[in-house]
Image: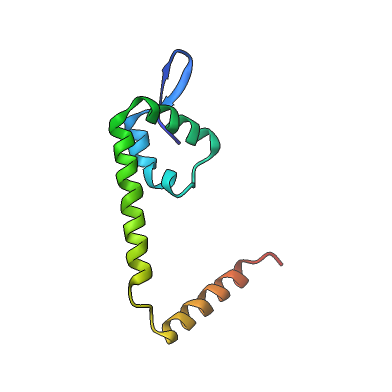
Length: 94
């Protein structure tokens, strides 16, 4: 939930809310309403625009490095896939 401040009857996200939701915003994990509030704040706040831009760049660099790095051994990938499959089937509705 975003912390809000009311300005002219329009709820906008605060700097703290934008900082706490920055990575979720970069990953498109926010609701449309939350994203509208953040975008309204970003329109007015250069510091938060810069912060969101830096966070988006950070995520791109980390993801690029992860793709370029060595992959896990085949045996480990098989064990993880099996564990995820077992967990999924255990939680599946009967």
